Image (cartoon, rainbow over all chains, first blue to last red; front, side, top):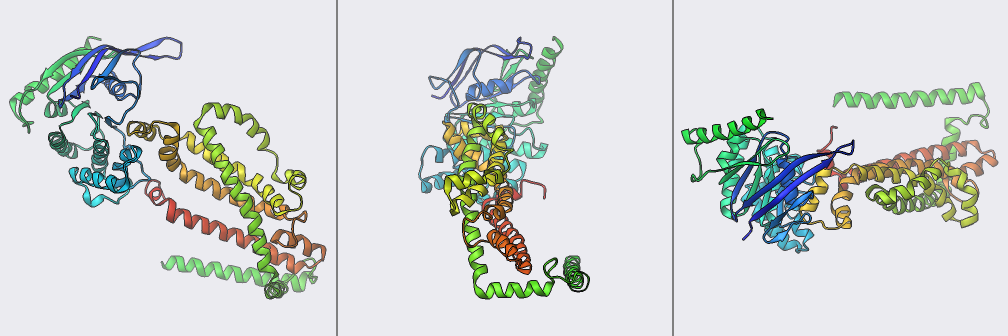
Length: 253
Length: 259
């Protein structure tokens, strides 16, 4: 059981004049074990902040996050994170990047390499085992970043617009690969994106946030099997519906 | 390729011409070896010094002084730089002290170098240390201040729980290129301090010592030999270090920066 529960969570950032800005207000959310949930919303609605709080990289002003029965108090390798920016350590070879978390846990070198290689194979980059990150394309780097997060065998995988910097074609391919990884590993995934198309293609449920201060506006269930057809009528309908929600909330400001 | 060859040939030609002019001026215009030794005077002095074996001993002694100073600067400058770059409190505490000590010229420390260490290799090493310490400190400090946040956060979510782990596994590797270039600068500064550090008689040998010794003996061709050896050795140290760093430590860095 590796669900994520967000309870009455609010986040305020201090402004220079002593005042505060509320980035998130009263978020309540429950993500089930092995579920794939996307967070969407207008830019600046705090979806990345919410993800960072769940990761433990920032603390909530009020409320709390419970993962697997434990209240989140700081970063933990049991919550894997894939960042939007390229976050691979440039001084390490691909295999050592993937094995980094294992090294921190004190796993021996042999074991580390063995596990690392398994995830390297899962993301299809075995032939780049000894390459340095600068030798990889953007898509490959993010695949390594996913493998690095998975190598820790986390309960939850948090992804912050991981494909945001990729071109459309690469992006579509990465989405397919992510789904196949998800099916193999059965991780709970929380995925932030600004692409509604991506959200509809990937998720079991889409959480739509309102503009700042962000709160949950609606949760859209997508019960269809995968792989999904991006060109189907239902797909377009849901996409339109979600887009309209985002636009409405933006206009009602 | 052809261009490069041409450049090399031009360089060699320029050296030959410069030597010829030097020889001509020394011999026919100045005419006194004490004021300006000629190329041939210097060459003869060089061969004699090499044959007698003193030159090699001098080089060895100077490298010893230099090594003491640089190693001390690295072993102190890097940790202090890390402390100041990573911990705000250490920065606030140490910064005023550093700022007062930094502008003092290394050679101004010579009296205390003698009092504290006597006329020993350590005294010469200390003067070189003072010159080399600050560039290493500053480079380490700056590098630690500018470790990209994304790497620190990635380290945290991957299981670096303590500052020590983050420093050891994330910040330090990310800072190595800057620290290396700081060490390179400090080696240049340290080498400059060498002549003065050996001036006050810490040993009977050493490139800097011999420079002064031969000056007192009015053997100016020998002085020129030591000047040229000092320059040449500095150049070689720099090249070896750069080669080592580029090959061994910074293979990854090459691909990250515009070259």
